Image (tube, rainbow, N blue to C red; front, side, top):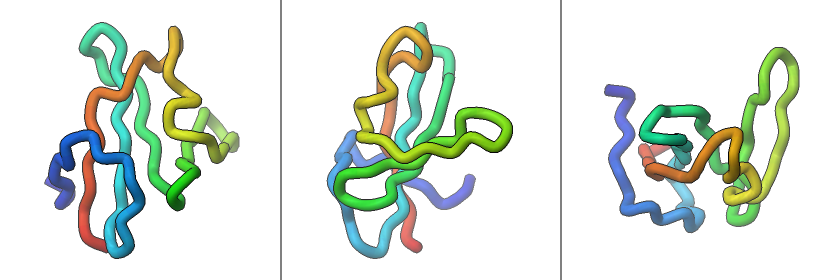
Length: 74
């Protein structure tokens, strides 16, 4: 709907594309992160709290695991 396509969970950085990682827990969507560069992803953790982190740094009991990585041309 927003122009994203699945990219087989390829988390590598691709110039010219914006990638997002979708996290789920027990098949319920919990979170989305946006790729910044080859090592960092960006997340909003409520209100005015924005962080940058390694992609797998948010996996766990709160957000679950990465269910899908999607991309769209920038």
